[in-house]
Image 1 (tube, one colour):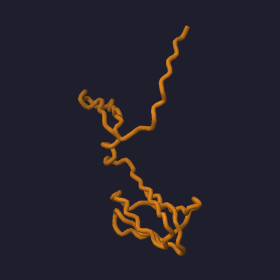
Image 2 (cartoon, helix red, strand yellow):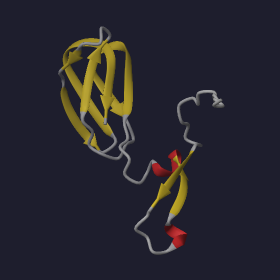
Image 3 (cartoon, helix red, strand yellow):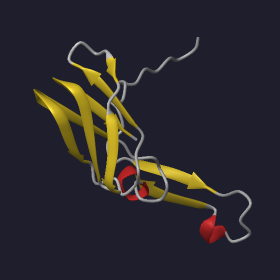
Image 4 (cartoon, helix red, strand yellow):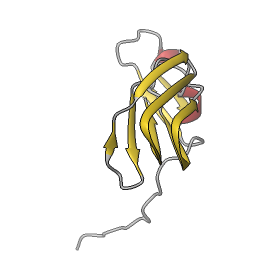
Length: 110
């Protein structure tokens, strides 16, 4: 008779969880397998994103995202409908979004 084991489901990964990285083409055993945390991998090319919430209606939203890049921007109103605004990049870490009417909602930057 078969023995069946069940294990509790693991929650979503956290930044402290380890990831194993394997390079089977390396000739040096020292580099064959490495481990790293999600947090340590954040600055090596994994895409970053930022969600900005504008809680009170405004004609202009200033978003300081600190992603060090010129992000694509998608804006939704409080009803989750996409809204188009004029996006001005102040620098790699700040965008100003201007609308024709004041509203509250969220901006998704990536």
